[in-house]
Structures are given as structure tokens and as C-alpha cells.
Image 1 (cartoon, rainbow, N blue to C red):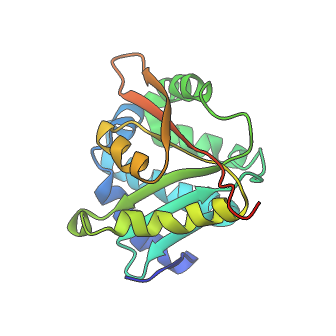
Image 2 (image 1 turned 45 degrees about the vertical axis):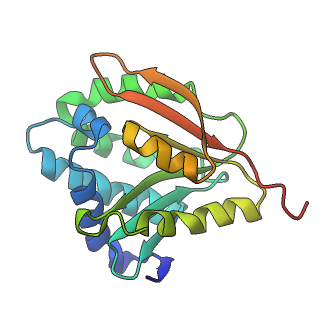
Length: 196
């Protein structure tokens, strides 16, 4: 399966893949209003792709867009999210205050040094367990390694931890989020020293 960088033409398919794969993801279940949840989740993924991932980051997909990985670079503008704050809050609905509280809590574990951030990664349920997640994440890791940059990823699904560890990440923090929220894991992958 060929992996390539995504374009605007891939947005609809990428939103479908992300939404189908992450429909029961613990963090979005906690942070999006349950009223109209599926619509909110799709809108969240569309906004993240079109407002953040494609204009400011690097988005890799399989040819059929059944797997998606959104990476944000170390030099992404610090105000990239600012124009979309109100839209993200509207999507969260009644859960916006909880979302903001969770953001502050997990922000304490973000590396202070510049990193490549794996912001979103998913494989469509019909195509899981075929190595596509690893394949679509690999270009971002290679890009970070080529720049001798560390990488960082967060997950609120314990099942993901072993997968990320197999890619060279190490858990650097665990936090049980308040209000009976999910467990949060912060994982760090040291910069490659190859070629230095």
C-alpha cells in the first residue's frame, strides 16, 4: 500500500476514516457534547485537517485514505489554533469547559523543546491490523529523524501505548484526568543521532 502526502481532495475520505476509527475514542467521548456526537466528531476532524493539519503540518495517507496520520512540526506558528478557537469550542458544546480543563492538565507534560507532534493517527475499522497505521506514521518519524528532532504523541487509549512503544516512544507521564475522565499517556521519542 502506497503512502503519500494528503491534499485537499482527500479531506472527505480522511474525515470518514478518522471519524469511523475514533468514534469511541475516550478523549473525544469525554470532550464532545453527546448531543449530535457523530456530527460533532466529524466536524472536529474536518476542522483539524483543513484548519491545522493541511495548512500548518504534514498529513500522510494511504492511497485509498484508509489510514491517516497528521503531524505538526516544531516550527508551527504558535497562533495557528487561535482563528479556530471559537469553532472548536462550539463543536465541544456543553463539554467545552471540561475540554479546556483537560487541555491545561495535559499541557503540563508537553516537552519544552521543539518536537514533531503526532496529533492524529487512525486506520479505518475495515482495514485495521494490516500494518497500515505503522506505514502511515513512518514518514513523520523519518522526517523527525532527518531533522534530528524528537517526536511526541499523546493517547488516552491504553491499547495504543504498546504500539507507540514499538515505534520507539517511551511513556514519560501518566495522568488520570479529572471528572472520571480517561487515563492520559504522554510518550516521547528521542531525536535520532544518526548522521551527526
